[in-house]
Amino acid sequence: MCQVNRLRNNMAKYEVKDGVGIIPEGTTIIEKYAFQDCTDLTSVTIPDTVTTIDSYAFFGCTGLTSLVIPSSVKGLGKKIFNGCTGLTSVTIPPNWKLIAEELFADCTSLKNITIPSTLKKIDKCAFKGCTGLTSFTFPDSLEEIHDRAFLNCVGLTSITIPASTKYIDKLSYNGGEQPFAGCSNLESIIVADGNKQYDSRDNCNAIIETANNNLIAGCKNTIIPTSVTSIEDFAFAGCEELKELTIPNSVTKIGKGAFAGCKSLTSITIPNSVERIFDFIFWNCPTLTHVTIPASVGVIYTDVRPLFGHCKALECVVVDENNTTYDSRDNCNAIIETETNTLIAGCPSTIIPESVIKIGIYSFSCCTGLKGITIPDSVTEIEKFAFDYCRDLESVTIPVSVTNIGYGAFNNCPALKSVSILGPVKKLESTFSNCEALETVTLGAGIKTIDSAFFMCPALKVINVPAKKADYYKKRLPEELHHLIVELPPEKKAKK
Image (cartoon, rainbow, N blue to C red; front, side):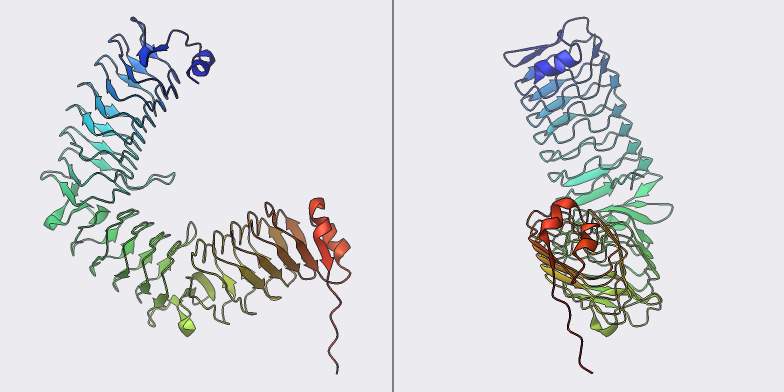
């Protein structure tokens, strides 16, 4: 593998002998991919003539255990030491101002790292997945910490943000998370006195934006101050030991993924001050049993991911009866948008009311524990991804009333064995793709377009269609499924 990399990049000058990486004296640039995946590399001496180490230079060198980077190195690419799982200690030269993107990501054995007093920026994912890292000293020179910088560093128990820090990334435009998301064993979060941008007021064990009172990062010991107005995106994401939390009446917004991955959280009270709730706030909270939406909530966002994905123990979803925007009519254990009669969030115990017209996007997505669902005749539309990744769903009957089914509405349901689509649906597009256990499909009359609806359904045995409709569906189904088409007997007309 190493030889392939050297030949690909004309790097015959680099060698590995008896585990030692040899870089000739006079080398100024260690080029991209130089030692990538050289698992036999255990040590390397970087000559002080080197000024630049390019991207991926030591990527995946799992045998490398320690490293001293000379002070001559000033230029860095990204992911240079990513995946060096044997690396235990690193000495960074005293003149460095930047720890680059994913520089030490997934270095799971890294425990000792010498940080220079000149450091100003830790880029995104720099130490992501460094599970062996138990402590980290942020120098007084540090100004920026970017998203996911310490993502899933489960060994960290305490952090102190220096007074010099001016910018902590909350959520990047491409879907990042706050720098300490997934640090499940964090017990103490302190912001040093004198920081003008952030604070940890009242010994709250959290990071708060001082100017606008937004809590951007918390831990299992956080006590939210009564001055906080917003719990920001992913603020408590991955706090696996968080069991309970009191949200004060000062909070008006709970951001995207705020409690995602809080695997010990059993219940939470959302105060009657909260006006906005964002996508997947309770994603993967498997012990959560009850959620109550207060009357004050006027906006719930569900257009990216579901509110309750992988909440397998969730059995009670209630909307305060005084809420004018949403309701949970008929004790349905779901959230319904009152004006449009759209069900926007369900759970394993949901019973869809007969007044619901639309089942919304992601409403049951990743609904672990949902084995069956009765869709009433009032429903006319099932939006895209409504039931995707429902891994326990075994069968579903879509009534004649439904004429619109969105893209991938039931895809990736591995336990789904039988499906009936009884009405004249306009289009089936990737509707049941990757349903690997699907055996029986029953189609009603008049489905107009079928596009990859049963793609990657290897167990499919029969596709039932109405009498005299075999030719109609052969024109719409791929040729490799034609032999599975079976015409059902004509329906007997009711006697007058």
